[in-house]
Length: 134
Image 1 (cartoon, one colour):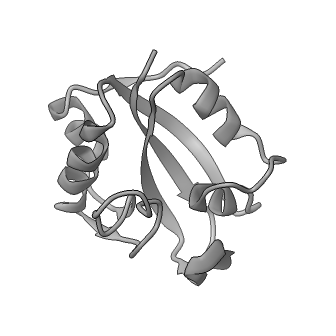
Image 2 (image 1 turned 90 degrees about the vertical axis):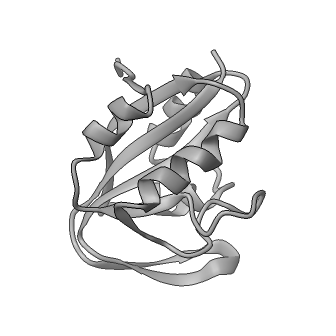
Image 3 (image 1 turned 90 degrees about the horizontal axis):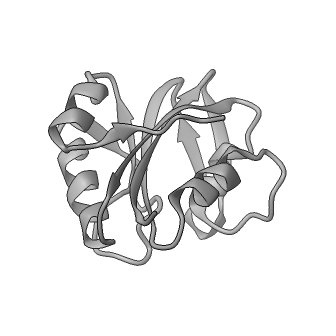
């Protein structure tokens, strides 16, 4: 199944992480949402994200490889890649963007967002469903 997914990530304590060419970024303790797309297989992409030991390939890999971060839930929507930016923009209305993160292939300001609001409600409005993890 192809589509867009959102990772709900808990950062358990304030931490600085070097994120590739973006350099060192300070991550405040709290809840983050990462918006991504998988145009072949969402489940395989999410399974890769869940693994702590992996080849570092994308910005999100640096964050998820930290012992202070953990994926808590995943939401998805069957769609084309163009929906990824629309979802990131909508979530950004109620969140703080981590500038330049995860959006090197588009014109968005960020695909990683620090959130305090009711993100589940936003996912439902966007037509996203919870992905049941094994």
